[in-house]
Amino acid sequence: MITGVNPPILYIKPGCPWCDDVLHFLRRKSVEVETVVVSGNPAAMREMIDLSGQSKAPTMNWHGEVLADFGVDELIAFLRRRGLH
Image (spheres, rainbow, N blue to C red):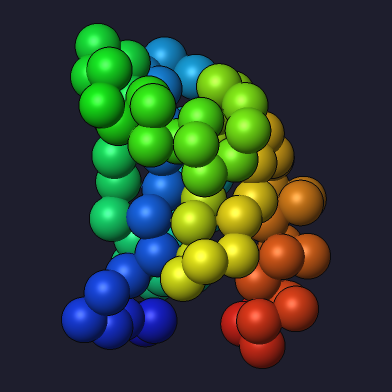
């Protein structure tokens, strides 16, 4: 399990199939994230847009490194570059 005091932040939208796939993958790999729902939350949406420059989910903030508008394949490569398999 990957845990920490400050887990990475994952911005999601309910009903988003890419968000659902990413959440399922992260659970299977026991990667802890803080999930932030941006739908209906203007402050969270603004935070995600300011961070990534776009409004598409999922978007991940891995301690300052941003992965925006991605699927599981892009997430796997992103995690591998951080030493996670």
